[in-house]
Length: 215
Image 1 (cartoon, rainbow, N blue to C red):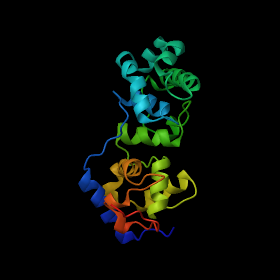
Image 2 (image 1 turned 45 degrees about the vertical axis):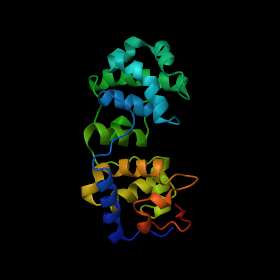
Image 3 (image 1 turned 45 degrees about the horizontal axis):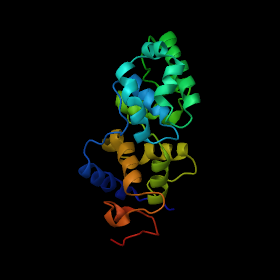
Image 4 (image 1 turned 90 degrees about the vertical axis):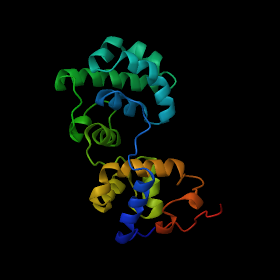
């Protein structure tokens, strides 16, 4: 897929911004800590399933100490409907202990520190940095990876390659919300099996050759 022309990138994001000026993630959370937990739980799970599981949890637990007080067994009861809940519960409890011991119970606003936490990879760290701390990170999930490659906006063979290219190519005014616009676009319009090109706001800027333009 050839790269999208630089002159097309600004109108690409301008249209997404006009349609959704203040995009938000779809995970429910209370504060930076509960966001970190929710994103960690969302690996290989849907946001809807995580929100159902954390609805009661986050009424009881909003700090690492409260998570330790809850304990691994009771945490499992809350999240047992989520895939890989056993390993996720173990990671969340270990994460809570590290946050208390090393960070005074606070979530560090630094990617390298976040990535040291159990169950936290680069994508999770980027989501937390963006949503909790307002940093213009690019959290490349399957949707962004697909949209970046399919449109030609940011091509790459790995999520990291796409992330690095987005960091270079997304105009500064759009960087804070860029990953949300791309995630939502991939989730609801530029879908994996059958992209809805007929209703796409940016189809004329997209390099995808097999466009499905039938209404």
